[in-house]
Length: 439
Image (cartoon, rainbow, N blue to C red):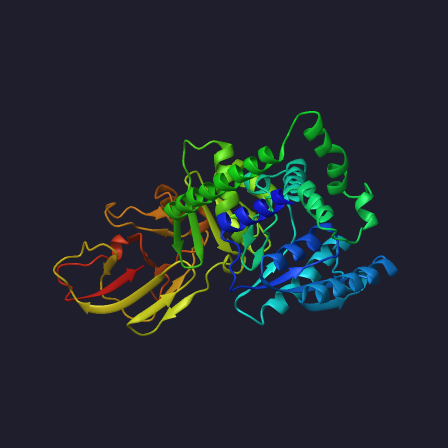
């Protein structure tokens, strides 16, 4: 009894989980763990209510659980909430019974908790649950986040027994004559968690000498490492990220190994752009100028970058007429501004291009097969637009997102942001100029 009380109090204080001013909502199944947590909260003088969801999966036994929890709440002087649901009828497509039950349970808990800003939702997950979760994640495949198991708190969710073992909870119940309901399904090996509980963790404890202290220490170390892992990856993500409208790019590092790239993309790309773990691995392996699509985004791979663009913005640009000045054009990559003004003293200003005065209308259009221009500074020699873009190392994904500025005869005057044509350069006799700026 003393061990559980000490573990409970120390963990709550160390992790700053509960305060006497908090309104608590305890999720109680009627089993050993949540029933003992209800008694602990009562003994410690916390303001709490009890909630129970009847999943109606075990007939009279489920109704008996609900009746037991209702009586527990009455005995402890706690408010009681109960809701019966039809799990099979409420299941979503492809959702297992366990997944449906979990979704319904937490949706309802949070709906009740919304009534008060200070309400925290308490579950009775304990140290053995946490070890089992870590082992399940390891068996199925995971990283440091999965290995660290269950967190003591997340938003409104709080787990004050997470550092207490199942054995200490049982001893507390026996010492205080606390009764609880047994779910017979806990003895079945139908679920992976139960098989781990019945066959794996006993071997780790009895044969290899694993102790509660070792389990708690390892999980604490992993949670701490996970915190710094996230901080480091977020800083690296922010350092390497460039945003151009709706397009985001991440700079690649030549010295990074496959494992490093994979870890970075799992944190920087996967949670935000709907790519699967298998697609993340492909992004590390695809050759230059390749791409892969998630359900909502396309990721381009170059030697230097990963570029992420929404699928709805991938289609080619449409031609835009310029019938009056000034004019501002925006797209998903950048903006272009066109105006006419007196010739400035300097024509080599960054982010500006100056062209000879030209009669309207002009138009902007995407490149077409066979397009040629005479880049300024090449002595009037013409060059294919495609070859110019390749020479300038403009990535494949961006080439079809760049406008060409053309006159009424469809002659290419400039590639805004890159070059102007020799034929349309500003001459000494020009008093006015056409200015193009971008950003």
